[in-house]
Image (cartoon, rainbow, N blue to C red):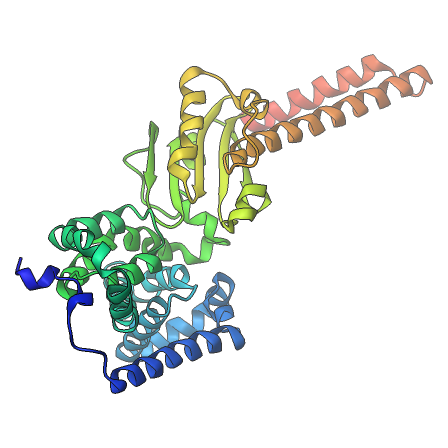
Length: 390
């Protein structure tokens, strides 16, 4: 690497010109005004799942009649949302495949996301890099040198395994000396898996009622990982799964009960501002055996391990519901989804007990003969069995 590429800019003698300062103020004002307008006019309401489903017919008709214009508007909108770090990228990603098909939808998602990320990268570099170099240049020299030498690998890792939010990687990268070409290439390649996961769900937009259903087997292709081995997709939020899906269990003739618990009811998630997500468990009917589980939270890869251990050891939902977790932690969502199953069964048992008590009272009062009730029940079951056989 050329030696001048790693010299801290704090050592350079050319002072910032007044025109440069004025330009930065103008750019900053435009960015602030754009973000303020987005929230002031509630434009985020148009980037919601309900709005997308409500306008699906009109969007499809417009796209069919104006394919080139629709493509340009879609990419431009995605670019602005990603470039300004606004909420709504997930909805736009879902809309991509829904409007343009599997292949082109994923391509347009990638173009829009990469372009928006690059705008955020360049804005951060233009507005803040000189200040950061002037203030901390002497201390950042070794860090800048190391990042510049391995920039592509670092960025690919951050994109493929999003330890930090997408927008944060965009902004912080702009403060380094990584080349624009390297940044664009690493971003474009690194976001392909995540873009594909979310965009592919757009095929089944009509069956999705909430973002949590992105992890549904009815949305995805049959997973090669279905079975006892856990897997995790490192999107934002992460999606992790182990065991069977409900549809897989039905194909194998296994009746399961499915219970879901929302993350926005977990105290730690509320404190962290990460209420979007859920834990879902499939339990074999008549037992507490866990047949499969799906977790969609910020650290789903960590939380799915508990379900894996339970399934491997033969422990079930009763064990999970009685397990004490540290408070407050997001892992409580695992216990709460098992507790919701247990409460549902307790309610069924209560109803059965009340029903038997009513029969006993009627028999005690002479209003009902228990043997007649027994024979009637056997007769009904026999009759229904004959109907099914015939």
